[in-house]
Image 1 (cartoon, rainbow, N blue to C red):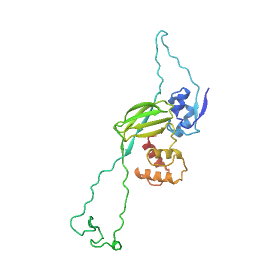
Image 2: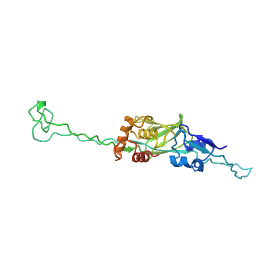
Image 3: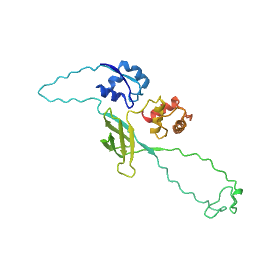
Image 4: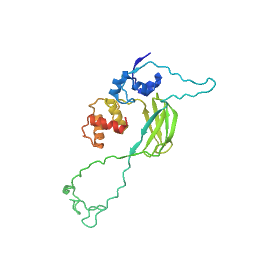
Length: 264
C-alpha cells in the first residue's frame, strides 16, 4: 500500500528506497515527489520532517529453466561513499634573518634596528612601531596515497589507499548510519574521522551550513541560531578563503560555494 513517509534523522532517498524495496531513482523521479525534488535538488540531502511518497510495489517476472540455477543481482547495492581527504599544507622553511653587514650594532647578539640607536638602551627613546601583521592564508593539500580502513558499526567493510587527489570510493549499505574512516592506521600520524552517514541537512537550512563549515575545518557547533558568533566567525573565514564578500552572513554566493567545495 502506498504511503507518505516522514523523513527521520539520518534518512536519505537511498536508505528510504532500500527499506521499501525500490531503486532510489524510482522514488526520486516519481511524480508525487516532484515538489520535494525541486526543493531539495539532491537526493542525499533531505530535511527531517520532509515527506517522501512511497508508491505501491509492482511485481516483475523473469523466465528461466526450472532445472538450472539462476543468479539475480540487486541493483543499487552497495551504494558508493565518495570522500576527499585534505590537510593543512606545512609551511615552507624560512631562512633565519641575519644581522645586516656594517651600521650600528644594538645590544649584544642583535643587529641594527630601525629607529634605535646602537648605544642607547633606554626604551623610552625608541620610535620603533609595531609592524602591521596579516596572518598567512592557510593552504591545503590532499592526503594522497595514504592507507585507510573503513568501519560501519564496528565492522571493517573496506580498506585501501587514497588516490593522488586524496579521494576514496567506499562501497556501503544504503542504510548505513555511522562510519569510521581511519587514515594511516597504527602509525604515529593516524587520524580517525567519524561520519554521520545520511545526517547532512540541506544547505538552505542553518544546520546544513553549520555542518558543512565544520566538515571543512571552519569550526562551529552543528546546532545553533543563525545570528550566533561562532557561525559568523566561521562564515567570515570561509568567505575570506574563497574570495567572497566577508559578511559573516549566509548569502546565496556563500551557500553556492559551500555546496561546491563540500561536494553536496
